[in-house]
Every structure is written in C-alpha cells, then in structure tokens.
Length: 385
View 1 (cartoon, helix red, strand yellow):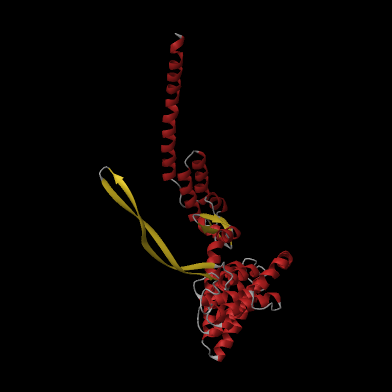
View 2: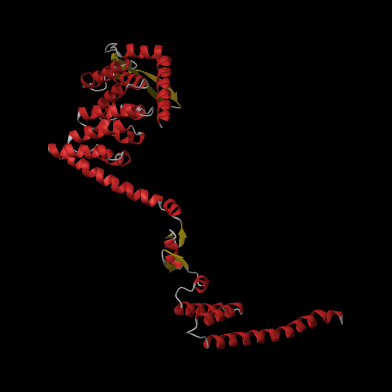
C-alpha cells in the first residue's frame, strides 16, 4: 500500500489543478469580453478597466486600455507613466525618443551616456582625426614644395599653427621627396619635435640622400632626438658594398658625436687600410727527371724500377695588402679620419694605429661620459613631460 502512495498523491494534485486551469481560461475570456466593451469616451472608466486588466494578469490588454485612455485624455499622467512615458521638454516621450532626450546615445545595440559613448568610440574618432590632420599637413607641405615664395610662406605659417601629432608621418614621407629645400625643412621640423619615432626615417636619409645639406640637417635632427641607438645602424652601414654609403655613414657618425662611433670607424679603417697580416706568394718551376733504376729479379725476369728526381726553382715573395681598393685613400680614409677628428676635436693624423691606441687608452672614460650624457638627457625629458 505504501509504494502506491506517491502516485496517488500526484494524481490528487493533478485533479485539484484542473479547475484552476479551467478557471484561468475563463478569466482570460472574461477579461477579453470586458475589454471589448471598454468605454472609449470616458477616460476615467477606461483607466479603471486598464487597472483591473493589469491586476487580472492581462498586461497586453491593459496596455491597449491605457492607449485608449491617452487617446481620450492625451495628458493623463497615470496612463502615460504606465506605458513608459515621461514628460520632458514639454512633451511626453518614451522609448528611443526618451533616451535621446535624456542625453543617451545608442551604440552597438545599447544605450550609453555621452561619456561612455566617447570612450567606446575614441579609437575610431582618434584614427579619423589623425587621418584628417595628416591630410592637412600634406597640403601644407605641397605648398612648401611649390617653391613659389608666397605659397611657401603660407605653407610654413599653416604648419606652425598645426598640432605636432599630425606632422610625424607626413614629414617622414617628404624626406624622400623633391625639392631639396623641402627635405631640409622636414628634417628641421623633426629636429624641433624631437620625436624618437622619426629616427628610422632620418637614419635612412643620413646615408642615402645625395645632398650634403640634407644629410647634415638629418644628423642634426638625430642629435636633437638623442637616441643612444642611432649609432648602431650607421655603424653597420660602414659594411655596405657601396663606397658612397660607407663614406656617408662615416660622415654621419662624426657629426652625430656619439663616442660609441670610435670602435665602428677604427675597425673599418683598420680592415680596409692595410692593417692586414703579411702573406707569402711562392712562384716555383718544377722539373722531374729519372735519376736511376732499381733492378729487381722476379722468378726468371729482370724488372727495372725507375727512381724519379725533382728539381725546383723560383722565388717566395712576402706580401702585405695596403688597401682593398684603389680609391680607398682618396675617399674613405679622409672620411674616416674626418669623422674621428669631429668626435675627438683634434686630429691624430692619417695613421689608424694612432686612433686605435687613443681608443684603447680612453675607452672607459669616453663610454662613461656617454652613459652620463644619455642619462641626463632622459632625466630632462621625464622632467619636461
């Protein structure tokens, strides 16, 4: 008997629930019938019925009744609020209109405050603003490139008024453009800005630009930026296969004034100026001849085995390479010597050994001075920010 008890309880509950379900259907039907008879002329009666429909569990019918109420009395506050309206700016508003009136902005399917919207869209807005600013700067630079005096003057005046954050990319681009005056102006502007992000573009022009005045302006900009890493690309350029690039890299290192340029220049000068080990070249003529025969007896036969002698004659020459190309002493050596003279402030002559000895004796001091200078520059930048 006990094992049937849960089943009987469930059946009893189901039977008890049936009248309630049928009663719910009757209530819905009754509510619909009452709504069908709503008084569309009496706002109070319609509002009262809307409240009863809402209390009876028919919010959809209640909403329709509230609409009828405000159709009769458009300023019925209770009905308006029940439908989600708020009175703002002398108007009843709801939904999107209400959110906009409150100052909210719809973005990505949701409403947010103006501050939230500004934060959410900041990357896109900043990108668009940056693009527009760079286009303006390019127009100003085009005026400067025209070489027409009044247009050049106007372009420089507009550039002076423009925000620096829009100038970096356009100025880096025109470092490769004609005329020469435009490239010099771009280098000077980048020097004034002192932005480390301009260093890669400036380093390329320091060794590839054919105009000396441009290269000088570019190196001045690199000095103003004051990056301790600028010396390394120029030092690597000393290994270029092209002589002009090697010469320009040496000149740039001299103008840059970074003590770390000493080992780069001295090593390259030593490697190309004749500081090579002595080698020996042997020119020999060799003559072979039969010197004798070695006779052996094999069974019943005699075998003659010739003995071959060798005579050698010739010379052995000691050779030391003084330069790896004919024009080294005309172009590269003066460039290396001039760069080291600019770094040191004095000329130790055209022998690389004297410069190498100076570097060995003063290496620690010079590197300490270099580190101190860059630390001071970094501290000044942080203080300025």
